[in-house]
Amino acid sequence: MKMHLIYPGWPKLERQTEFHLPPHGPVVFAAEVPEDVEILFTDDNLEDTELDSSADLVALSVMLTCQLPRAFEIADAYKEIGVPVIMGGIAVMLHASEAELHADSIFLGEVEGRFGSVIQDMKNNCLQKKYDFLGDPPDISLVGTARRSILKNDLYNYRGVQMVDLMHASRGCRFNCMPCCVGYLGGKKLRARPLSKIIAEIESIPNNRLFLVDNSLAQDREWLKTLFTAMIPLKRKWISHPIMYDPEILELAARAGCWYVYQAVIDDSDTIRDRIRMLKDHGIGIEGTVLLGLDSHDDNYIKRLVDFLLEEEIDMAEFTILTPFPHTPIRKKLEKQNRILSNNWLEYTCDKVVFQPALLSPDKLQEMYHYAWDTFYQGGGHQLRMGNLFKKVIAKEMDDGTYLRYNPRRRRTFSAQSSTDDKY
Image 1 (cartoon, rainbow, N blue to C red):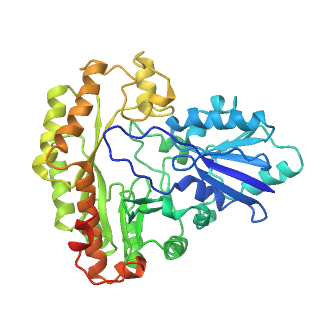
Image 2: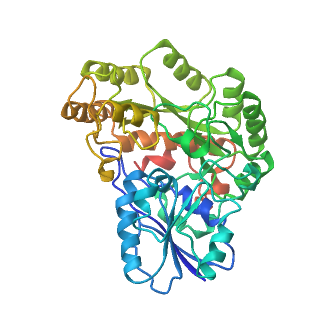
Image 3: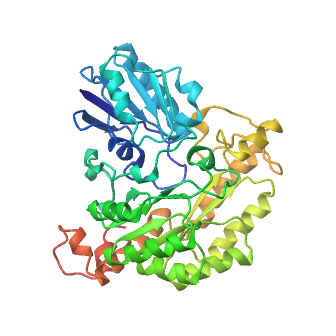
């Protein structure tokens, strides 16, 4: 049996340097596909997707809402030539009724321990219209090592520098933040994978640079201590979403190879200043993630936020516009207030205004989004700042002797400074 697994393309964030990370959803899914199924994988963001009439099944792994239009286009094209299509992933879970109109089957929920029966149904010509496991997660111990062998790794580099590989140590989140749908998708409590499986997966990844894509590494102090202590001997370099702001945890994170953290910057309070200082004190880089368009935001507030980031000298910043994705607390609020302006999923890229802001016109918020990017990066573009972050990780790798181990083609003697000056 042959499966064409496709990761649909989507419009990238305006103003941000375009780069591509290896997709996580498809490789996690592929680990659950029986080994007797041949997988042809296409990343539609980087390759031309050619219809394969010899495929027995097409699987579309759809993470983002803004991937849906392309996913539907591919699904419709395959259905026209008579190849059955199944769709799954975060965006399909959020837009299930719409996805059903384009796919022969949809898969909702987490896949571990469950996809073998789908393949059996396919072989028996009884593929179900919907496999619905939402709200019924499998035992977290079933989550194994992702099947990264389906990827074409040469596609995932930035100007010749290897990007990060994605993996997760846990699912679920207890915080239920207003713009986030993780509570709906993965549950409102932390579900940590067994430590042995986390370490085994890290050891299986040939890349030294990782992105721990857990929604939050700030949920369970004792688990974090155990996790980071076990990671120290591996000497990997990694980035993550926020970490618990506790001196012992940050010290362990730094020793375990924390390279930089995505730190949400919601205001210019002393709390945020203290978090930035703590990260810097532990040699951890900072990419500020700034959500624009909250009900407290007018143009002066946004200008103050940008000034704050510049004053604090954080490494990078990513500005996005509040986007009311389905099944998020903010979506319910804005729907109740009749403030949703668009349900065109191609505009749900986090750089377009699709709702009515409280203190700004939609056009003014869009203008302030551009102001934030242009002002923060006016002294050194996004590419330069990104390059400086990679200089830092290369220096760390050279200090602990892992640079040549994970970069075998770099067989000459040079300093961290000279190794990157010619690239940026």
